[in-house]
Length: 556
Image (tube, rainbow, N blue to C red; front, side, top):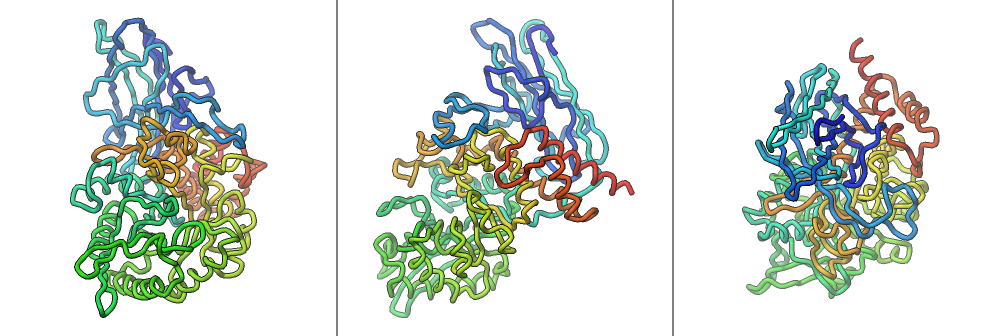
């Protein structure tokens, strides 16, 4: 509708509003359905037809009985120069470089906003983001945009939030998006693990925990990830190490504070940083040790991973960290890694590292991201974290399968969460995780704001969402850094929604059985699979059907 010079269109959270394109009629959405402990969102697209030199200002008013559960965000756009790879398929919103909506900026109370002139923008309304318990029933939400100039013209739209009298089950699927603590430190300008850093850390981790992540990478030692051979990233080491004539001593006090803080923020599980370098397990991670009164970089690229000195260190450290975790009652919360992304040519080196780790870890859970089934089939990897492009070779052959992807999985209709991709390509992941009974999900970047192998340092994603064209836009992060924390992206909320889809399917399964839920998915998406292109309408229909079925059983 249009009132004077203000046009507004109520749309779904899965609509992406480009500045140069008016949303289509089939994107109109005035109602969302949630369980009592579920979060959700909707948007209002708007445009001002105004020729003034200075953009007009407007204010946002929200009226609703559940107003305290609603937070409004201005959807901002970022420049994406590298939208896809040369081999990427056509399932993108666009393929052309330009401004793409992605970051969410919280709108302050009584804040006056500048209106987009002859262009389109949107405001996202996030419902129950703190994951409280919503009151059951239908709740009206009236949203008003009021001009701050002259005639004070205004326009309003109404939405309905329907809350079903049901509780989504606790998330059982393990989810981690790797947090990069050097990036966090850089953009907040504070020393890793200092008092101020801890406050910044809480912002990041609370955001992760509220949006589907329940495991966090724990940097006992600086993670040997995305680092060029012979180079190093800033030190982020939680465990203090000292060596004297009697051997190694370990100080776990910083790790203790780290775990306690993460638990306070809602994280429940922890993955210990990798004990060997990426892509082969040939070297040791950077480890700072205090020796003869001096702190020295004792281990790193110069260290033979299978030499006597590092084997001695690992053999001393693993039993010590196990004993510490036992003393705190945290041992069952930890997951261990050997080396990231081994390939067949690395199997000899990786196998040596794996044998040492598994000997020391015993039955404790461990696993690594990989693409070749041989590593699992030969027992070299306990928990296979299979890349989506080859996960077909694992499905049905192991009962502890995880899935991961990078930005490279952008062809053959594989799910992914690049900025240039439609929301349904992100969100279908939840149905896939449920359908194939996958136990965990890993992605390498919650906030990797740096270039490839960190060779050119840090990159501000507000200025370059594709890390100076080192990655495709959005590959390496789900949040945007701020001085005191982080702010979410649209893609983070899509990820939250897909994890809630998994839990909704599990809730319905508790009433009707797994076969019936799978049949619903197959009936609406006949070509369902790991490689599967769907429409936004199909994705929404699956969730609407699941919700309707749940409501029937709740009412009985």
